[in-house]
Amino acid sequence: MNHAQLTALGRALRLLGEHGEALGADTPDARLHEIKGDLRRALDLLEESVSTAAPATRCPEHPNGPVDEAAPDLCLLCETRRRAARRSELNGSYPAYARPAEPVAAAPSRYGVREDRPQPQQRWLPEQWNGREWQLCGTPRRDRHEAEQYLAAQRRAPRAAMAYRLVHEFTDYEVVRVWGTPMRVDIEPMGGI
Image (cartoon, rainbow, N blue to C red; front, side, top):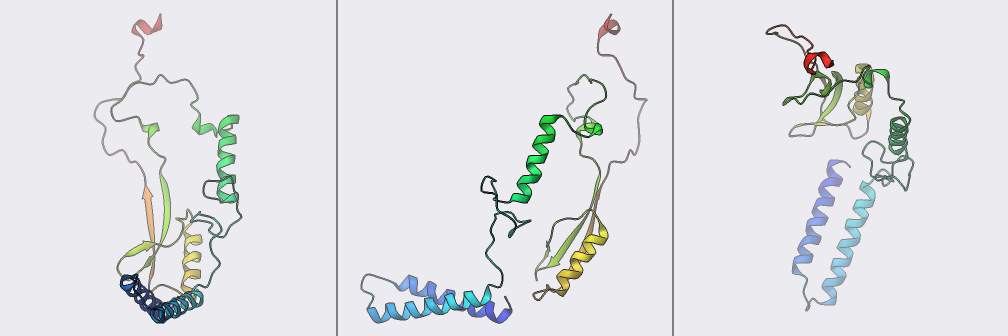
């Protein structure tokens, strides 16, 4: 939707709002016909402004993707991914790094242990300037080249934003200093004898 269409549609909807506030039991038929005409004009403006099909799913990642009625968001692609994850969980086909190699006695810890924390990850976030602030304009990517290609396609789009940027997000855990020497201690007294 370009600026002229946005302005015209906003004006038409504000006019309809004024009609709605002035509506009463004693409203004459001539006024109702005027409201009907204004409503048709607003619908025509809206019809001209909408350029894509209505989303078939409630999924923000695949709005016009294939539909699965059983999925909570109606998205077949995301539901297939969720089903595969549930199947691998039930079949015990987790990757080797997700399963502990030996049974570990869970010791209560106020702050958790290192394995409880998420794995380090690097993502590239495509953002666009909406006139007031930077906002995320696409799915975060794991590959910088793919994120740059996505932004290049966004810049060539008919309704491109004023500006785009690529934000590098990297989370990692780095040991800064260690006090003492960590040692593995058997929790059973006398070594479990």
